[in-house]
Structures are given as structure tokens and as C-alpha cells.
Amino acid sequence: MNALTQQETRASNVVMEDITCIMGHTARVLFDLSATHSFVSATFAFKLNKKSKPLKFQLIISTPIGAEMIASRCYEKCEVMIGEVKTRVDLAKLGGMEYDTILGMDWLSTHHAHVIVTIRG
Image 1: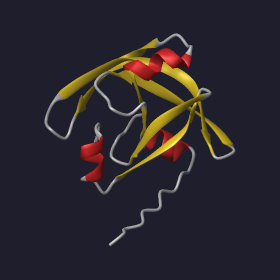
Image 2: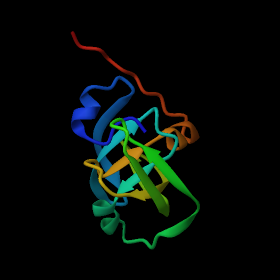
Image 3: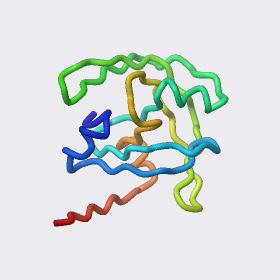
Image 4: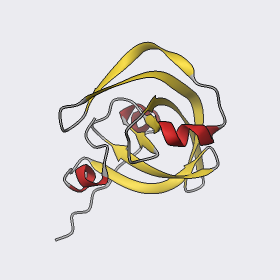
């Protein structure tokens, strides 16, 4: 995973942040090209109004500052609205995030998403 905080996002060139709708709630979302999985913060997970399920295996996540975090629970088939397009994503619960959700390559590749990066100078 590349970024968990706004400061790390500003320093990265493989992430993009936006506000979108997750399960009917406004969410601060990080689109992270270096994350293999998608995540939900422990705080935002309460808004999902879903029961989590245990992951088949624990995910050990390394942060840019060298810390390790463990995700062991997942919220399956959470609705994500991008514009007027409705998609679904499985979100692993992860504490210690400034973002409500991180959408990683699992979601991006499944939905054939294209991330267009514009560099302002």
C-alpha cells in the first residue's frame, strides 16, 4: 500500500483522492494503484450497516513509513457509485487510516478503471 494519510498522498504519484458514495454515504476515497486490495477504515465501517466476515487469510499491510498493519475482516459487495455507475467492492477493515476507503487494484482492474493523471506545474 502506498498512502494512508493526506501527507503521503501529496508525496505520491500513484494515488488519487476523491469524494464518492459508498453504500449511500459520502466517503473520502483514495484510489491507490499500488494497493492490491481495497480497504475501509474502522470508523467508516460502522456506516456500512453490514456484518463483516473473516478473511480466508490475514492481510499484512506495509505502510510507506515501514509500519505493518493486519486486516482480518471483510465487508463483501459494498456498493460504490462513481458518477452514475454503480459497482461493488469487497472492503477489508483496516484501522489507522485517514481516508474512509482505499480502492486498490482489485477494484480498479475488475471494473476496467482508467486513472488519468494530470501533472500541474
